[in-house]
Length: 318
Ligand SMILES: NC(=O)C1=CN([C@@H]2O[C@H](COP(=O)(O)OP(=O)(O)OC[C@H]3O[C@@H](n4cnc5c(N)ncnc54)[C@H](OP(=O)(O)O)[C@@H]3O)[C@@H](O)[C@H]2O)C=CC1
Ligand SMILES: O=C(CO)COP(=O)(O)O
Image (cartoon, rainbow, N blue to C red):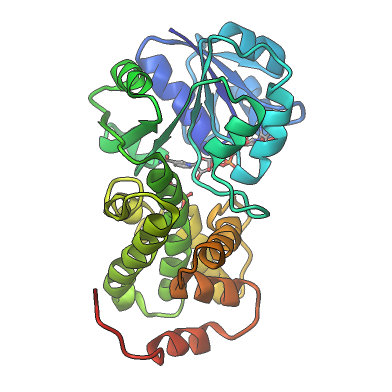
């Protein structure tokens, strides 16, 4: 199959590596001036993956799109609308868009499949989310992930085309829940990092339990299935985010409470804003997301924020 991967950062380049291993014909696209693409052109590696010479590299979006039946997209979620604005004038007929991103639009709270529908309502779309770090996959350590779409036919087609001994896919059954869950796990990951930075790692069990509950309530209020918060896209991704040394979101949270900067993309920062917006819209209290927001936006000292969470009124667990 001809596949194009749009976005040549940590995850997009891994996807190109992985799908090439499955004998698909791959074009990897990076925008003009991308330092990631420059690195791949010069050395074929970014230090995490080495791309086989069969993988074509391109800075031409129109050519990249023309070549493929399936467009796999992995850019930062806040850049996605501008990418869709570039894609929508191109001929997308007969193509499928697969979103490999975990975020919500901060300014609107919109899910990324909703943004696809705004710009390309006729183009079938799917999401590919769940746990997995490049550092583990390239060592041959397998994981389980989930593909979801409104269309069962597309899910079946993609799962068949993308499965291997390295990734076992499940068919998602709740597109809304999986999108919100996948994005929200990054916020819980930031909270986990903050606990590490405050020497409160022991509270991660409570974070897992209360974090899933909080996101389950939001998913349900939005019309999804609350059980999805306990699936691969959310709880199933906690090991890779709340606990992993490789997680950018966990690391961001840890460094943030120590007063240090982190240069890499931590999707959970913008997603926190989006989730609070959705919480207000749907009337759902999101104490953990709110605490992360208060800390990130410097409204209170992190230790005080943590104490405040403990001082909340007493509640039934479920
Ligand atoms: N298990 C999983 O499913 C995983 C999912 N992810 C998700 O993948 C997404 C990307 O993360 P990650 O790869 O770590 O991020 P990176 O910052 O490493 O890469 C993002 C890439 O997007 C490119 N980009 C941004 N805007 C545009 C645009 N308008 N047009 C073209 N390219 C653009 C950047 O280009 P440039 O090179 O010019 O900077 C960069 O190459 C996130 O949503 C993240 O949550 C990440 C890891 C694992
Ligand atoms: O989604 C991921 C792992 O499944 C990657 O998480 P980070 O972006 O926090 O590194």
